[in-house]
Length: 96
Image (cartoon, rainbow, N blue to C red):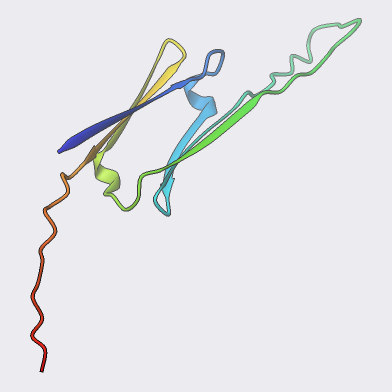
């Protein structure tokens, strides 16, 4: 099997804010920072911010069971195991 590893730098995002899916041959990584409102505090000025990131990488047809992901210190590491491509079989066709 061939191992591909995708490293996505996502500093400031928590594990719960990251979404990872595989659809139509594409590995989709998205992260959206959820702004927490603390209503019990008194504010003079309050600004809200939001951040999001999204990337799609094409891998073709593969089995989702061969994809593993882990998030360590702001870096998402996705390991994808692909089968080695088989040698193409050449067939001879007779001409009538």
